[in-house]
Length: 333
Image (cartoon, one colour):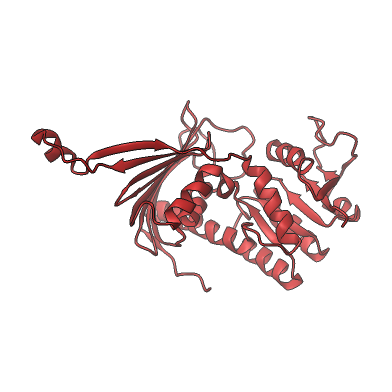
């Protein structure tokens, strides 16, 4: 069977990574690259840089990866859907819920695979965590908290930290817990003199009763990517920057030191750092997209799922604006 012909739109920071990984994945062949801004980093190699999405489609591609600024996702995706091209769009799915809805409808109408690049689902630490949660190793889950902090990325100009970074945490939290958000309350800050927010805190609840909390900003001199899941048997901590997963077990040995036992409540038990295979998340994501296009079992993030995540992010921004919690209806299954 011939390799799937891949077209890439955008050779910025994420586009460069997509190009590298596509060239490494079996069963696909990067045959065309388009970017109106040219190719200052020589991502294309021997391939010519095409001027626009129309030229990319004319190259006869089977699948496309869209890695341009969020404001241009809808236009590119709708043109690709009309041309019958399976498409992976970088997160967030679109600049607005309405645009995302149009994208979902367009790909559904054509029977095409439409996917969104929520790459954290493919992080080995989170995949291992989800597997262990599903098998009941943590018992009942009480709380999921994430921290995602770093300096401001020069590549982002058209969205704030909520859509760029918090969308990662909202998506991965719902995925890890296998439950949808029912409510969020958020606060934002503008500290860098830019149009969009550079700090957001979100608290909320999932349909299964789990309490969630997200701390996200572009104002920290350190980079932090941490997910903490607490349950009745202990706590999982996933560091998605390193792919490490650690388990802090509740203690089973009675504490005889009265002042400590009365203060701590849950006692400290063993600490285990798990060993497991660690593959590059972006490569695993591309393999999942390829498999979905081929009709094979796949964990690709669908456009419907990407739209749900955007809806929760928009709900958080609305909450920050109004000072009131935003509630959500459970999606139809």
